[in-house]
Length: 314
Image (tube, rainbow, N blue to C red; front, side):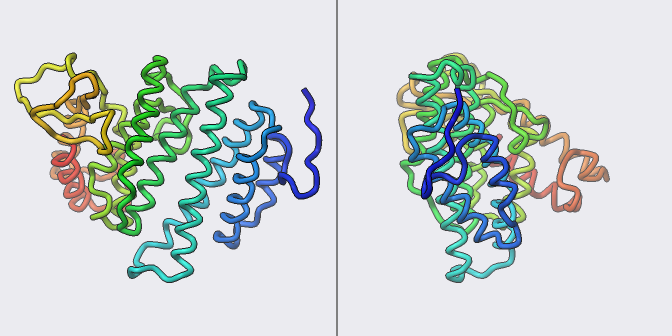
C-alpha cells in the first residue's frame, strides 16, 4: 500500500525510508538541538493516525538507534557536574526524559496496532513490549543520573508490561537488541530483570561512572537470572528475592510474601556464581578485559563494585 507525501506542517517524513533520510540529515554538532528535533518528530508521529503500522514500527526502530547515541552523549555531560544542575544542563535532562516518554508512547501505539488491527505487526509483539520495558527502565535510570527519585507509580506501569507479556507467553521470545545487550539479542524477561536489578543497585547513590559499570554488568549477565512463580521455587533459605506485580515497588528480599499469585521470584544462583568467580579472578590478578568487564576499570575497583552488586542482588 503506497503512502502519500506529508502535507505542509505535518510530519517531517511519511514512511520508514524518508524517516531514515531525515535522521541522517540531523546535525550532531549540537546535542541539545538534535534531541529537540527528534522530540518534535516523535510527538508528531505519535499524534499521526494515518501512518501505516509497519512503517510506524520501523521508524521507531530507526529513531531508537539515533536516540541511543544522543542519550549517551547527553549522559556523559553529567560526569563531574555539581548539583543542582545549571539551567542549560537541566533543560537537556528534561528533553531526554521527554524523549524516553515519547518513545514508550510510540511503541505502545505500535502494540495497540499489533494487538487489535494489524496482522503484520502481531509477530513483533514481544519486541514491542521489550522496547516499552526498556524505555520505562531508562526513564528510571535518567532520574538516577541526577540523584532524583521517580514517581513510584512507574513501577506499576512496568509490571503491567510483564503481566501482558506473561499472559501471551511472550516473556522468553528472543528479539534483536543491539543496544541493550552484549550479544545483540534480548527478551521481555531479560529487559524486565535488568530494570529490577538496576534499581536494586541503588542507582541514586552511584556516580555516573559507577552507573555505567553497573549497566555493563547487567548487559553481560542479566540473562543468567530467571523469573519464576513463587510456588515453583524451593530453597533451604526462606529469604528470597521477589517482586509483587500488583505493587508500586521493585524487587525486594523477603521471607514472607502476602499473595503468592502476584509474586515472581528472581532466581539469582547463576548470576551469583558468575560474579563470585570474577571477584576471585580479579583478586588473583586477571584483567577486567579478560573477564568481560569495562577495560578502563582497575581490577581492584572492579572487584569492589562487583562485591557491592553481589551483596545487593544475591
